[in-house]
Length: 80
Image: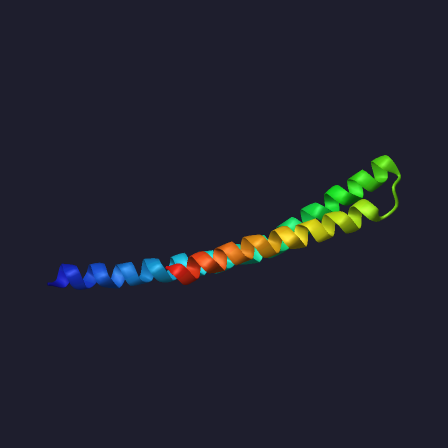
């Protein structure tokens, strides 16, 4: 009886930590792709002397990738 109670309590804690880490991951998924896109775009602009076009394209691509990743993560959280 006590064992079952402790297992339920422990499972609840594990689920809450798992949910916390999933939301923490969303923060990274929002920040990292646009930063990588900006870095890659800036690098290409310097190498190809193309003006800010690759920088802007990299940021836009990063934001789109972030939106897709966050959508998938929220859908997964919502389904569970």
